[in-house]
Length: 124
Image (tube, rainbow, N blue to C red; front, side, top):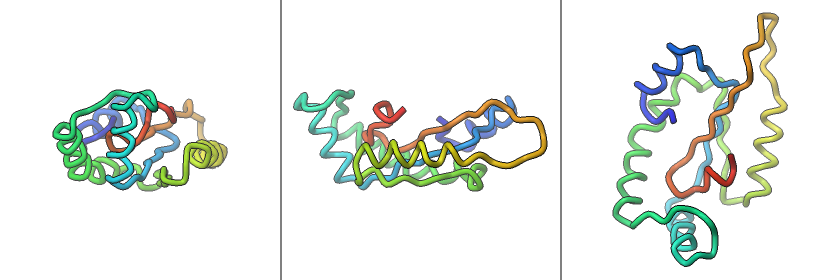
């Protein structure tokens, strides 16, 4: 969330603007391998059938960048193929970079996005 322009507009209308937006990047092969590991019980997660996964990846590729146009100034892309430690370290490094403003400081909100199967729950 947000996955569409409508959802992004809703967040903006409710004054819920994140300070940081992280986009986890992974190729489809990595996502499919991870889904197979979930099915085999090697890692925790929710298994999704290949048809459902294909549909979710297609929807993600169609709507994702349109929904994120509003957040281009605070969007950070993190490549998840480098491993969990790299993802955590990069997120921590980026969170420490605070936008400078003389105005009032709203509470910090972070949005973590990525295609289905990239392991968002593990990184959240």
